[in-house]
Length: 310
Image 1 (spheres, rainbow, N blue to C red):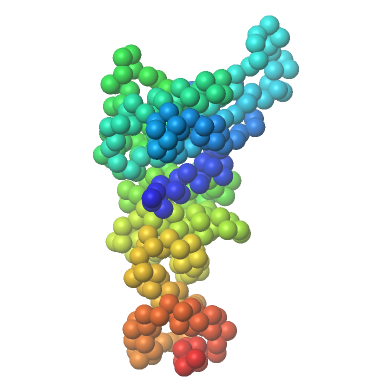
Image 2 (tube, rainbow, N blue to C red):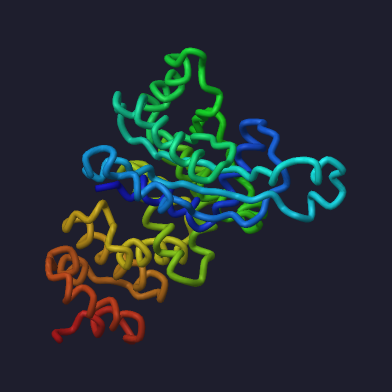
């Protein structure tokens, strides 16, 4: 099953497909026509699954397409003498481990999508660690001649977004930067991306926040939490709990997350917590009880009342 880290990267491009094509230009220096109508096209490949024994293996993470913007052709004197203009297509593979079969299978994906859409097609691999990044960068070298259509996006070339202003203007770009660089301990980039995630007012907030925090080690998580405001810490922990992906779904992590939410509410409301109450919170292993305490803590006059027997 894909990890929260893996899934979070896919969500970013699925929600904002234009970002992927922007990266082809800004990071990799490709010249693209003026594009519009960005869309997910993975379904185009589903009908080819039986060619691999109907195993379900022919499933790239994401397939995207874009069309040439008609307005860009109005002043193109050659447009009328050419066939229908090409758009662009892109396969995105988030790779968490070295997969020797992927070297060959990726070109099956590429050929099928290019044939189906009749578009110039690139492959973008996003590795989840440096080992996979080194492997992915060598894939081109193994082909004869090397294939320029395979691109690798990792911390070597992904821009670091450290401006909250830019993050507000381009939140998906900031979150992508945070997921790639935050996985390697870059707290400055991560905090900016996290703020961009928490700024969403709909269900994307918890979806992105939980994916972002999944890239961190326990040590990094504790350190980065210290760089957030108390309100941001509270919102983050609430987001993790609502997502069901807190600490990759480990029950122990969920319990500790609920305890942290409860303590944070008390701190935000200025309520001192006696040692006996603190011990009671830590000893509680009933998630339902913790949730009821959390609900009561938001309106109770003091900590003791919130934790009173139900």
